[in-house]
Length: 162
Image 1 (cartoon, rainbow, N blue to C red):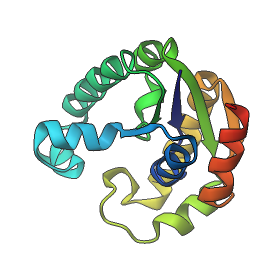
Image 2: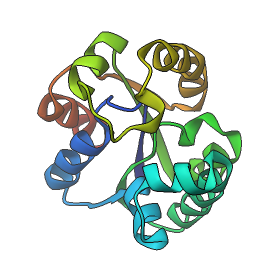
Image 3: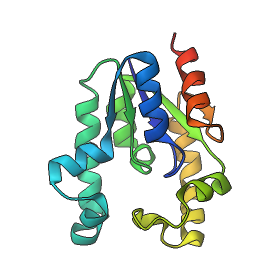
Image 4: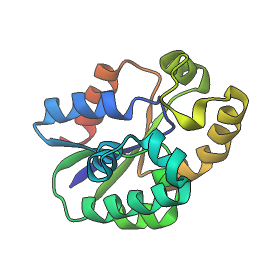
């Protein structure tokens, strides 16, 4: 069974996922990295050159690939689990765990990063956060407090899957 991490950008999916995979001795997969490797360019560049719709098609293909994998820890992109087709694609392969972090904590973590195309404008980012929250909650099988340290969050998730 896969452990599929979801949540808003900056909620800790990649850091927690990396830590969790070490604790549990499982392979770690980051869907954003999968897309960048397959496309040969950064996600920011994909958005700029081809648009969000193009990116979302590749994201869906990644979700379909994950469905065929076993016993992995998967970090999904911030928007992946807001699309029902992606949720449906991964749901049977494991449990979706929402890292539920407060927007203020996310802002502290991201800082003034220019690598996140959807976070350039904080007001828009907050509106997106609010919009996505209910979608994350409906996709999630388990909700974890994402405001803790990555190590503590990973240990808490590992405990649930023992």
